[in-house]
Length: 306
Image (cartoon, rainbow, N blue to C red; front, side, top):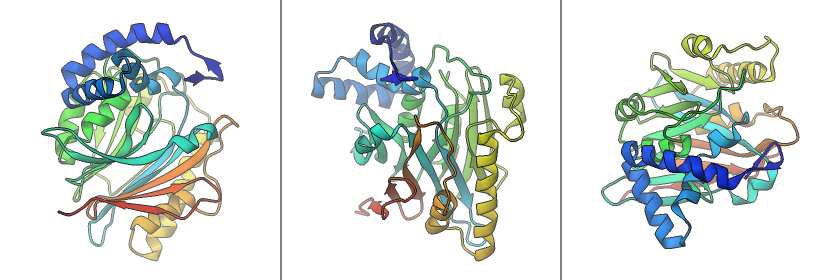
């Protein structure tokens, strides 16, 4: 695991994992059960797995852009994101299906040790997300790591259940979650010690800064109006408006908003778009498009309806 191209003090992070695991066990029981099963099956120490789950809190660099839509005509929900990480990690990202005893059947975009990076479950609850809390840097606290939260959220059956879960856990880090089921959408912006839910719009767009005024004030967010993240958010909105004029907002529209003809991400050489994920909760489909500018042809993953 690298941060700013420096190898991290793994033993030091494992010490923090002792505390993280207590929170994971208490607040995310399905995730802890899965973690212990992975540890037994792979013979990897559970604290190493917890350390991997704390990836977002450890690395904490700007990544990803997302869009979540409820179509005004047929009320159908769709959502998607770019996955923006260092290109060297691109070969490791893939889609996996798994099921936890007494839990949900999940389909997720994953990396080794991060079995639920984004995705949906067979009830239709879906999540995409972006990193936030960078301007200035928001430090993590003891709590449930972001990837453990994602894993547990995908065990919920609806947006309402997911929100009830999120407002009652001590999140360790910062995130902007865009979630949907077959009927509802919502955005949840969070920093350690503060979480705000919005559900009153039919479109949510996120880059790598807080949009919610409560989180802006809480984190003392301060950015110039021409900041790259703000420009990226504006590009997403322009593309959304263009697609909305053309008709139905479906998976293809989401892919055009995120993929377009020009790159929306303008990171340093360290980060680039390595994949695009689009989800249709009603059809229980996840569309994975590898690469970035140009993208490969999408690969469609579907749950069995049996």
